[in-house]
Amino acid sequence: MKRKGILVSLIVLLGFLMVVLAGCSDKARTKTTSAEATKTNVHQKITITEPSRGELWAPIYLAQTLGYFKEAGLEVDFQTVTGGDPGAPVLAGEAQFGLRGIEMPLIVTQAGKEVKVLVSTSQKFPYAFIAQGPKFTTIESLKGQVVGASTPSGSPTAWIKACLSYGGLDPSTDVQLPSMQNSAYIAAMKNGNVAAVCGSNGYLVNKLMANGGVMLVDGRDTEVFKKIMGSETYEMYIMFATDKYIKENPETVQKVVTACAKGIQWVNMHSTEEIADALLPLFPDRKEELLISIADSKKHDLYSKDGKHTKTGYQAALKLGEYAGIVTQEVPEEKIYNESFLDTARKTLNNKQ
Image (cartoon, rainbow, N blue to C red; front, side, top):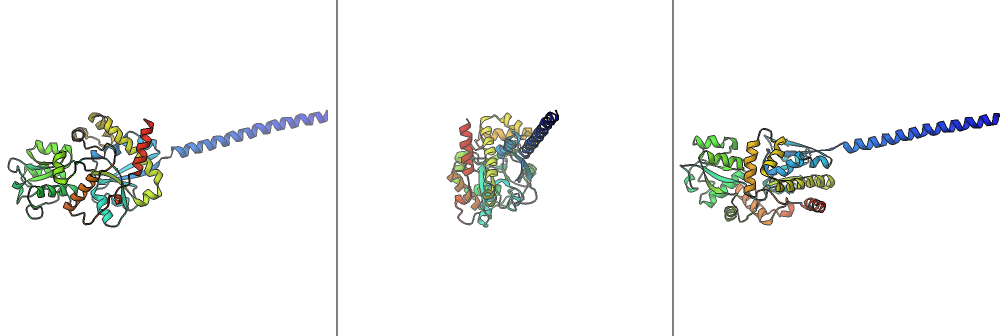
């Protein structure tokens, strides 16, 4: 009896231990699963700088508002840099990506810094050269006048110089080119302070024309632009990163570029109204401006179809850079572009269709 009692006690004890161990195992498993879930839910923080918020970078903004970045495990913050160089934080390693015009990588590459354009979101030239009517109706009529420009090395200034040269004037001697904010253009034109300006987006062009403007040179017209710059294409709006960041973080770069490629697809499959509504979270209280600018971009086929550059578009960028005085040496396009991530993204997206 005594031996039987001991045996029963041992069986009970073993049963108890099995229950306890099973409970511990479940807790450990639950803890591990919870930790993995927590790890999965943590999004990698990415900063993208910009000089201003422009709708021709729409595919990249849509990657944010449509959740493509989030799907890739990224938490993206757009930082508008005013009063300084928007590319500086990227070059310093304080931001990972930057939105700029193609002139920026041309400038820094000549200065010995290594950056690459990863995505181009526009494929045709977006600017127009507009004078104040009825007094100024030709380029020749601008001789001796003040023409409102942007920064000396900016694309708007370069376009103005190209138009003046095409029209037979010398930009360095025949006109004055003070730097102005484009928000001051309309008042300056109406008050007679300037005779002409560069309309750099559809909304601004629309407002200038509605206030007595006269179209001198419409760069959005493919044939007009080709006569002046020798190309039908021009990939102005771009996203870039440093070579160092690309080399050290290829997986992150691929995630970002793939999300942007999704945005490019989305833009080309949706209407002006749909694009404006999707962009509104990043353009609060600017619905009217968005509708006009997006409609203009659609009309002139400005949005990129594939995010890539063209050889003729790059040559036109070099030519415009020469007008602005920012291109002083030969810059091979392989030093400017890295579209391998875009190629991978497009293959992935095409396979899913």
